[in-house]
Image (cartoon, rainbow, N blue to C red; front, side):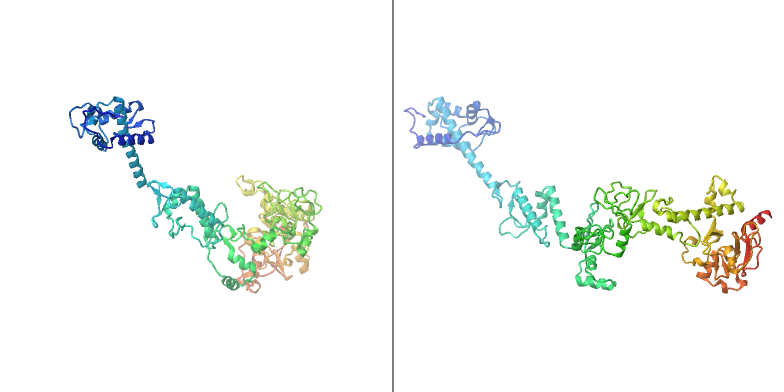
Length: 635
């Protein structure tokens, strides 16, 4: 309690009440400290150690010099030059003390403890005013989120340009996530995911894309993008390639059902439900060439099925050969004639995996399961047969050849039965279509043995003719750089053309291969009855020409229209070489061509028949070819 001497002027009214109120205020409010625990000076706002607060305040306010002054009326005390940075509003508090206490405040002989208490009161009053001012400034600088109503700093708030609403980032993120959740569950395909409404009540504006990119994480942005693509695909406007390595987006051209049916009719196809479905949902990706169904995303597209029927087909019991749906009470084969015929020679063994064996009946060793193959180099049940190329291996009984390749049993039998395709005998048909090794299997012996016998006969005759013509020592066989070096048999088989006589079923020589046509092997349009050897031709014309050494086996005729050796005997009267026979059939009627317009003989040196024959246009038998060749070499 401050006291004043009797000689001092009377105190200002309200002095005691003011001091009492200041002390009570000081007790209600604490001293403000900074983050390091130091006291903040309310005058100069410097951080001060707690023990030095009173001395620092006295120096800042220059109170000690003011109290030591006597006989001087000081309305505004003189301050020292230090410390600098004093808080100017404190001057008003000095004036307030002088007005309350009068001159007694400056002249009283107050004790040091009382003086220090008065200084603390002044300091706390000033500190309280500073707190109120700071709180007011913060309230003016803060705004509230229009969704959660939390106070936000201006720099942390997000303002929407069109509606001037402000939100915190968390509220906007939650709002966008909720919007995406609703659209994922919704079947509405017409919504625009780029127009997300403002979260504020009764606001019809949209959140700008820049704000969406600002508040969402990368994962949430990807989710929003995927949702937009999904909605676009569901709207039938775009189609996405289901190939996981592609994913190309394809634009769909929408057509009505009536337009699709009219297009099918215009293409002269039956307007069935499967054809309409195919026109509407079948797509082929231009990037990866994947053919797929845009409705059920099946790869490849399910031909002859709609999506519903294909789904039912996948979950039904099917025929083991044609994959047609059958009753669960039926066996593994449908009632069609073709499948019933396959069943007669099909193996009925069931592998340990539960799949039926794709081999043939009564086989020595069961064929491995074609549906459980793990090795990439092995053929699988879904692979096409490399002979027919029309059905997969599992759709008919199969055999595995000695080389390891698998084919349909019926396909390989038909290939061996048909033999060569043209008129000239070739043996490519007896080789595996994949590796060119000779076909070997115990179930084909009835076909392989006659083929081997015919091949041996042709090879023997070809080597004999090669020997008689002196070609065993030709350069192509003896030169190490030759194509047929040390391969005389291969040279003979690729040099001499042999044909199968229709009557005696024996091979006979028909000239060199280069003398025939370029497409001799592919000439399937021929009459095999016109192929006759020299011996059978002599019987037809009732000739008694017989070689004393070789009989009738090597009797040859000259082509009636050129100098080549005849291979065809047509109408029982006329001999043709292969080249002239093709002209007769395809180009012109050589039988009606005058002799003067036929090819002329080039003389004994260049004539394939030796030059000793009548003019072309007349039939001529050359006799025994072996004897004729021997005479040529002797000359």
